[in-house]
Amino acid sequence: MLRSVGAIPYGIAGDRFGRKWPFTINIVFYATVEILTGFCATYTEFIVCRAFCGVTMDGIYGNCVTTALEGAPITTHDILPGRL
View: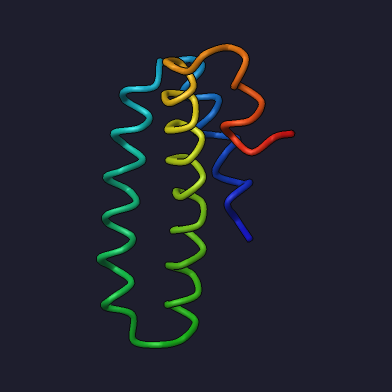
């Protein structure tokens, strides 16, 4: 549900600073949230951790799609990410 929320800040950071450092920060944040999910004691804590996980998930996806499309032929740029 919150994946689109993560696309905005990570997309802006990727445009402003390049893709390397926002992607690295995103991976570290994602791994930290995933580890913290295992230590949740209540259902509310679990839902909050999974919400943060959703925010970081789309930051990773957007960055990976952009990197993958750089080496693809221009004629396939609409097909590869799933836009027809």
